Image (cartoon, rainbow, N blue to C red; front, side, top):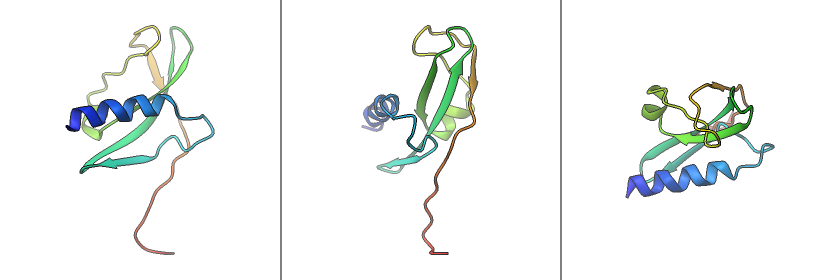
Length: 86
């Protein structure tokens, strides 16, 4: 079940508009996911990946366009949610 949710989250991440918050967290059935922006250094195309923190720590990123591993993470905007009002 969690694997299917992960696939859905990844597909949705590719649909994110560049103007939207790109470091948002998605929580689905206890699975916390983050959105990361990359630039492929081979084909020079930007892309977005949604993955868990444990997946991110493996550093196994590939460009979905050309399948190159020569990718660089981009600095992007982020948004956080807190339970307390400031």
